Image 1: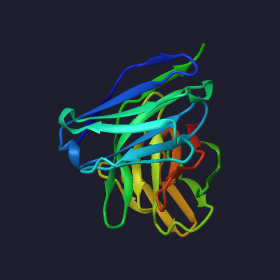
Image 2: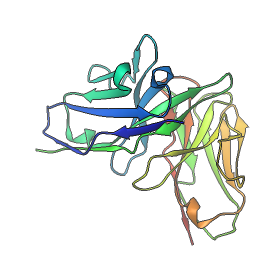
Image 3: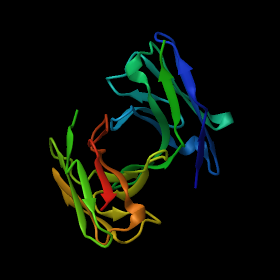
Amino acid sequence: QVRLVQSGVELKKPGSSVRVSCKASGDTFSNYIVSWVRQAPGQGLEWMGRIVPVLNIPNYSQKFQGRVTITRDTSASTAYMELSGLRSEDTAVYYCATDAVTTIAYYFDYWGQGTLVTVSS
Amino acid sequence: DIQMTQSPSSLSASVGDRVTITCRASQTISGYLNWYLHKPGKAPTLLIYAASNLHSGVPSRFSGSGSGTDFSLTISSLQPEDVGTYYCQQIYSFPCTFGPGTTLDIK
């Protein structure tokens, strides 16, 4: 069982960057793949990228490549998602989630509470 | 990227009704299909993984079926707490992609 607690609401100017944190408790965080998913107002869920354990290698959606950086600090049981070059379309709730992988399945089982990022001048 | 579609986009049903939501992938995804329920102001919760496997703690009135490109989620007897938006997700290849969602409310 893992509990994920995300950082608080952010208000950012266009062109700036935002970093959202996701702190885990309850299990060995270093074993987990962590994904980031966002939901813009009135829109559906959109996967942004993930970071795999041990080597901490990130994979990004092509849509966000070059603007998103996902990292983790294993000693702090925390994952981070930084998005740069913010524009109004990046206004969304950002979620972290742990990825569960089995021989027959891959799914997101534990989720953070979400962080609202508003981009406005 | 694999595109996911869902139907209907919204649905209103009565308590006790049997409800079915369908999801279609733009190419075969074998059984790598998950279903989530997203309630306003909350994080999404996993209902079904690998097309037909009920996630731990999810009521047995939820079931999933399908393989290849066509999938469905069924609620056998709708309860008031089932309202929200349902999303399918393909995880056959990355980037994983979600359907546009089906919003379910109570008549």
